[in-house]
Image (tube, rainbow, N blue to C red; front, side):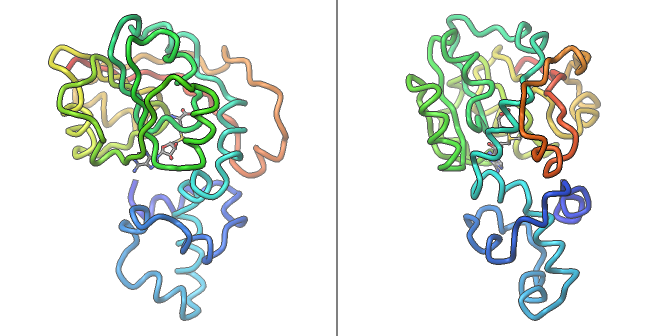
Length: 233
Ligand SMILES: C[S@@+](CC[C@H](N)C(=O)[O-])C[C@H]1O[C@@H](n2cnc3c(N)ncnc32)[C@H](O)[C@@H]1O
């Protein structure tokens, strides 16, 4: 999703963040901002200012309010049918964009070895408390901190976008014959059109956990991850 798509699809809660909050983000998130946009916003262009606050909504949640993301993740569990498809036991597992551990808690007791990559320090703190035995590393999709071919299963939930560079990096990290498994990635059609197998489960099977109704006011309707896009390396 490019900057303008991200701006046009921001959830209703984008109002909670200011231009000062945008400036607090790590520089990696600012690379996608078109040239001149921040200057225009700083000089009073209201449309540019609103686009910035909208387009960077999700990174601001992860980086500035990790507990808020954690509340969403805990409210909408992953569909059990998706989890049951993952072959984890005895495998070296790489989890990319692990967040606060919604999937990790399932991987941790089963994997032979588990490396989790997550850029947000606040989310990593929650992840450590939930999965103390996992090897948790700071990093971004585009340059995963892992040696070539390490993972027998590379998995990511609700995080991967349709980006050929990111797919190449996931492949680099995965052993030949290993499995790449994306749970509810953005634009699943894009992956399916490139030969990934797609399994869809009924999201209404998932029991949403009790939560503060304010979460829906901020994020819109909850949508538990319920699809699996996967293939062999
Ligand atoms: C919707 S959350 C999902 C978190 C977790 N996988 C789960 O299902 O609960 C998206 C995650 O992607 C991470 N993320 C965002 N941009 C990233 C990037 N460029 N590289 C790696 N992770 C990223 C966020 O920090 C966040 O943890």
